[in-house]
Amino acid sequence: MKKNITLAIALLSGFLVSACVTVPQEPQAKKNQLAISSVRDIPISYSTGSQFSLAPKYVTETSLKVSQTQAVYKLYADAIIADLKSHGFKNSSDGTASAFHVGFGIALASDLSDQTINDEFGISPGLPSRDDLTKGSFLIYIEDANTGKKVWRGAAQGFAHEDSNEAERAQRTAAIVSRVMKQFYATN
Image (cartoon, rainbow, N blue to C red; front, side, top):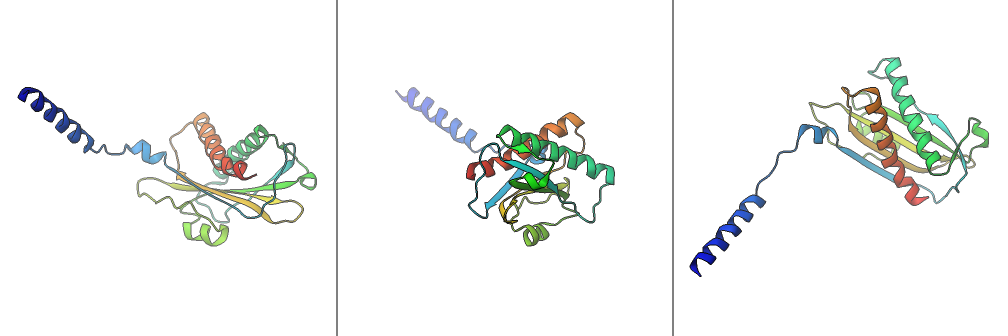
């Protein structure tokens, strides 16, 4: 009996010690952090088949080269179009036929601070900066074509994956857009 109690105490002690062990977060996990926030401004919904148009917004001063900025915006534009189409919306090259416009912007924290995002856009996910990683923001909004009012706004912040190849960037961009837009679809 004493042997069974000793064995049970030893097992319980082992479980308690293993439960107290903390595993340091891997640098890759920190690099993959993504903070998302969104807000619904007015209760307008769009039915499947509604047309949309893109309205990219650019930061006036950027630390990226023009070619880099264009490449990033193209990735996000393609991902936004694909995501909206997969949810039954149609892309319109003619903005006058659109039910809504999709405005979006991408910027590094060095070019657009959290405070400016809060002041100008009204929401910020609040991902803490890290000295060893480059933080970036993706801002997107839905504007009603008839009223000109913002219907929904979303923002995501994460860390740039500068060492990724083109396919990995496209895949990550699509995943970010999908996660942010999921919040729009939930309230549409």
